[in-house]
Amino acid sequence: MTPADVEERSQLARFLDPSAFPASGEELVAAAQANQAPDVVVDRLRRLPAGEQFENTQDVARAAGLGTEERRT
Image (cartoon, rainbow, N blue to C red; front, side, top):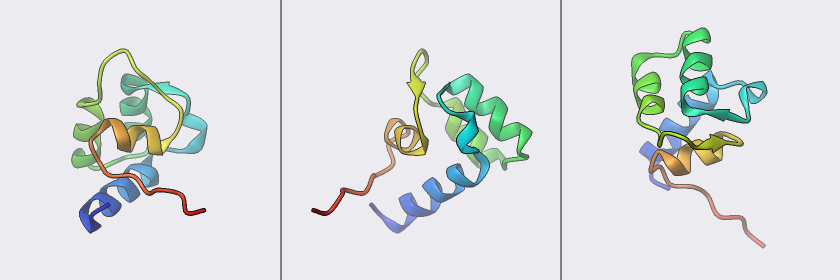
């Protein structure tokens, strides 16, 4: 993950409560707007693939093309 990916994923998580999941992209847009997310966050959510259900912020980050962290074992 690049530092920019980390920052963007952090912003997504800041405005998407865990209780918002599972949700469609449209539902996540509404949840972010209810939490007064900035336009950059709402715009990113609007570009999520239609018809998908997201279980958590990591699912959203992956679908948005942001990097994800790998678990260490």
